[in-house]
Length: 68
Image (cartoon, rainbow, N blue to C red; front, side, top):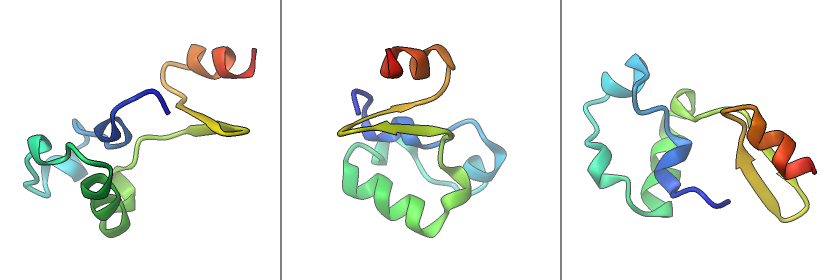
């Protein structure tokens, strides 16, 4: 996935902001994975996979680029 790990987190969602987690601490893949395991509701969706590539499907044009 070309995005940084923190892109998988809905940083502006009230469910995330209510956690009190500092986004600056989400700089590694492990930190993001740990957060999403505990709070899957704050994961950015959709994530679209094709082969060994993946993109976050927002904006939706990214999905078209992946499938082209």
